[in-house]
Length: 437
Ligand code: UTP
Ligand code: MN
Image 1 (tube, rainbow, N blue to C red):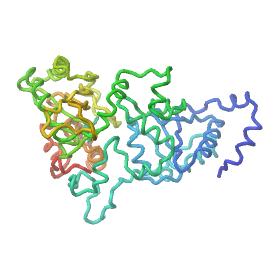
Image 2 (image 1 turned 180 degrees about the vertical axis):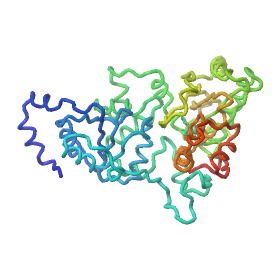
Image 3 (image 1 turned 180 degrees about the horizontal axis):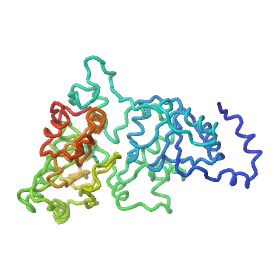
Image 4 (image 1 turned 135 degrees about the vertical axis):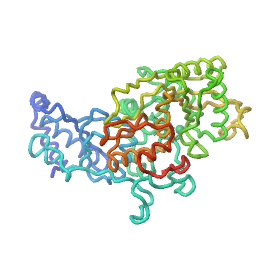
């Protein structure tokens, strides 16, 4: 085993030119990320130094370029919960291994092939622990309402981190990253960059002249108080009426549905998610840009970022899990008048403003992908993960927000409703409000 006490000796021996010679990269295809939790920062920096001296690439930041995530002493459940919250696109193809893979590789002086004994398995974080006899293994085989589940875990707002993970990662770095990523438009990479520059607070970030905030981040800071406050069901319904009016003024036979947490019956959310589509294939994209223009004319558009569709049917099915789907979508901040909300605004205490800012997402799939988009965007995130895992492992099928592909028959399975998808998977239909796992 390695001990931090050998670090000074190692450093003293090395002359600068030796370091650069020794740190020549030998293994281009392997990019290691060492999870610091439990390991501690001094051991992590020692292991990083050691691996680099043997020609390995060790990344300081966890990103999609990482191939091997190495953890020591973390509980598998907590590690996986944390990894899934990192919004990685390539998580499904990364090796998540324990320190034995790393030590084997250091001993051999090359990356050893990953074997089962090295892998940290994704044990589904069931809370409370499931009864093996009566509780089905997959969340998509259970009915989980907002009522019958532990409130603490279903009503967490923000980025969905569980308290368990918060406790384990309660160091300054984690708290700062959490603070920074709570701003709309600030992802893990930017947060990490600011942290490494020594910034620890919003005022620090805003006072730093060399930091350039993009449009989304500027709006994120501008409306921080409003958009970090929970959105009520009444507010979501009021926004539904406003958007419904806009959508139908443009395309009378368009379909608009409230999705996300509110479709699952939640009383509060961090944003409001809608799916909009039209019976005429191809019209759905223009619809979204027209809705944006209309909201702008009404003077209620505080921010919008439109993403055109990147859907390419010939590239499906996708074998890697992607954090984002390919449908046309827009991320909005809308101005909502209190007078339009039944019972008034969900305001901060002592706040008598007549309006608040709310985050709204609109997604616009073509009608033939609508059922899959609706299932994906209704969530919950955990329910979706489990449904995809069930499809892959139990049915040899690939499910995502776009389609379901049968690997045995080598064909896509069409669906016009969510019920069709459950049928294809051989699962009993589970209502949206029972998908709160
Ligand atoms: P949200 O993040 O809005 O979660 O994504 P939520 O369940 O509505 O919870 P709150 O109340 O807003 O915090 C809604 C669903 O859309 C899926 C997610 O998996 C989630 O289940 N989603 C989100 C996607 O499929 N793709 C995305 O790009 C974003
Ligand atoms: Mn939502």
